[in-house]
Image: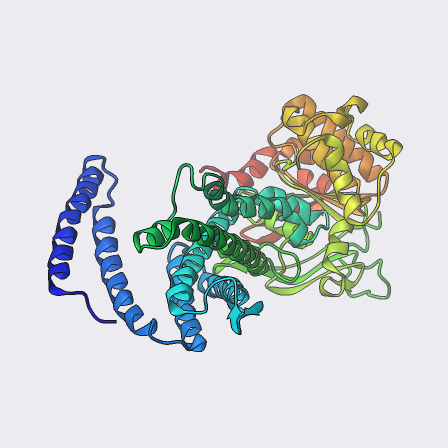
Length: 272
Length: 255
């Protein structure tokens, strides 16, 4: 593979320049409505653009590789970055550690399952998705990004609800209940909150939306039916990894928030 | 009650000597010293009142007793057994805590009353439930009521009954009547008095001097995380006049 021909590059440059008009629109809207996110918008787009361009250049190299270990190494790096991004949303201690464990375990577990050969047809090993960089990296990236979002929703929900229900939780503890039991209803709700957006996306699949992966494959020239099958597979991957990640982050967070003597660490909410 | 030997901590030959004991207990959070090197002995019987200005550490004292928090330094013991040798959940079952606000669970009164015993695998009979309602003077038909539809006073009584369902030896009450009207307050005070007569040790944090006078046998006066006075209620009101006592409270209350 090599870089695209010169005319294509000039075309792309114009496309980017014109799409910046949309960014200007976003910034203007933010300014007009006093949302105060002008800097955040601009900065995140600039940063995101550079990141994804770099990624794309690296992908050109990576796709040449057939070594699964290197591909998993790339996924691992993505996990670390995702955990770091998730951490930044919470001004509390140890979130990076929790997110890293949850995102990595859940994503890698599911990726291993889908790339493990189940049977061989004509001496070619068949796994749920192709064992190639062109599949593993983008699909793995989608899984990791979604696990990050889902675990973040769970954490946000947990922190808000536990803050709100501190009295009720301590009422349960003061009766001799375990810390785990005292937050069970809250934990359950936060799992649901994390899963529902993705579940809704599955429910409207094909009718309201043609999601990212399928669109990408179609634009890339793949038969829409094959693209559709991959879309269903990626949703199953996202939901299973997301669910595992949610349960992990929930458990780890509760363990973090209570002492071994079933006491709520109130000081945790006011880190110095 | 054995008032004579009350402060005689040297005589330690059996568990009766120091039923509820704090030895050099401090509690520090975010470098704020809330409880400051407290040593105190509390009787096993009767009603002990904890009084003092806002922010003096009264609630923290009760939370230490129920072990919702652990002392930073020092030793708390129950019947001469150190707190760290008693399994925490068992301890909480024996020492119930009623908070300032009821913090009831969803959904019915019955759900709340059965919550504690269910932790220990015990199911309450209809008779047990009715008995609990009687103790807090709530009508029997309240069992199926949604707690959201109860008045503040009724909710607080459900919260007391919920703690009683665990059959505690000691009941801690954190300003249980501070948000209640006079009628509810009177009902709850009667309940507290009856419980004490049944042999349940009561430790109550209160803001109201009248309530202190009506209810308690023994008083602990807490200020800036320290006990500055421990007397029988009678002595306390004998020693200081009303104006002096109000002065004790006013200092930090004006916020």
